[in-house]
Length: 596
Figure 1 (cartoon, one colour):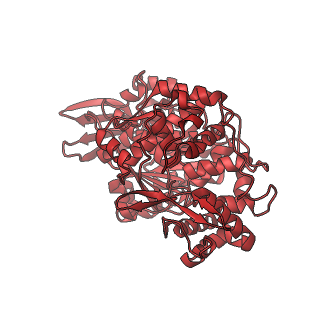
Figure 2 (figure 1 turned 90 degrees about the vertical axis):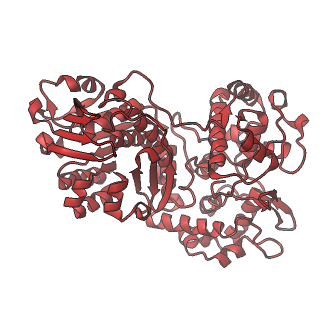
Figure 3 (figure 1 turned 90 degrees about the horizontal axis):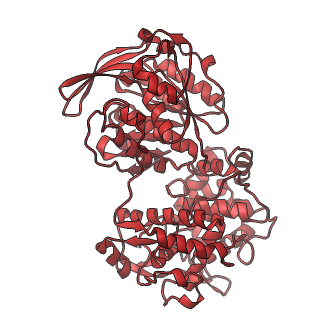
């Protein structure tokens, strides 16, 4: 979202002695150094607040050139230094830990982070000092991240627990998570807070409030594990400051952490080579030439015009219930299809008002009726109090039944949305006011929804992006977009079907391709492979076409009538027909999810 995200790191670099693989190596180190260099490497503007050695040791000269290092001058001997031994079985032993000038950092040394910035307070040897910095930064309105270490937890568990409570983003490894929370599966924090648990070669777990998302790590040949967790932390924080969903930030962070352990000390972070990217699933690839040609069609197609979400089935412009309706209704934009014997059966079609309506059209008509019958129930408090029977009644068709195939997932999402909005002290109106007052309104809006049940669970933010499109394209212009901001790709199953049939993504794995052709239920990793590729392809189409995401999305969404689920495609009616690969037997991944 931001071309140059800002990160403030509070914590001193160190000079370390490492024992690994039968040899000893002197190296620059320290959580502050690795975190700062990792963030800088993925594009962040980084300020380090720590005592600054004078003269600058040779081991730190390269880092000093890359970072904005601020703090009182100290002799090099006053820097923290550690002696660390790594064992083949994965154990790490700190033979010596000297605090040095770490305690000389003062809050007055910290410059104004600026709007949108994120601060990170390293796991200082004195957790009380770390807690003080975290609380004061958070009070100043800065998003704060903190880390920890096992000996600190064992010696000061109550203080570290308060550090967790003061952090918007908290970082620990699996052992530390066990010491603080009881086990990995017990990790939970209030809505609006995120815990990142690194798990070495098994990747990481991201816990948004109480919702866990696991991300993988690439396989690499480990040389020096020093700084892997701090590299993960710095990369994730930089990507969060840039606007990524926490799980997407963690994917990039896991790849960069893996890259770091392939060299000694911070050398990989100082390399001129590009930083590691999150791994792509090789079973699905992008066709760059086809993307370019489809983008060319969309660039001039009259059909590529952003929809304003007005007309039949939508509230009139100025309707006082519109905001609550769109926030609560967009949560339910998923699962409009039936499964039959392990395969896609048919789309959801039901009668409302003596008219057969399909999927999303039915949903909006039902929510418009709801807004007329009981508008207060669409507010967060009303959604939080809904029981299943009450939800079924509000979504009833002409026969009096709730026709939604995903069953209890729908009222559960409604309650999660309402509950988290209440805990966060938000209403749709207050969230809009907060976002529109921010430097990056769309970025603020999406980050806020990352904390709200019903929206937070999807790393690709389909429902969040759809809601942003609705609110920015409605005549009321509920959401303003900042300079250079645009809605992310809105990747639902219609979009995936279009991408597969157009050929902008190609399935190279025949087993997966056969499942798509047969419309068989696929696994989570198979679905992720297709959807991630489609997300990237649609983003490229938007960039190359020069059209807004709203225009690109409406063009692809309209393909549901030209290239539908149950009948033969009407290729003659499709503006993209001349550039289409005509892979019409392919179908979207059949996978039950609340994301789309």
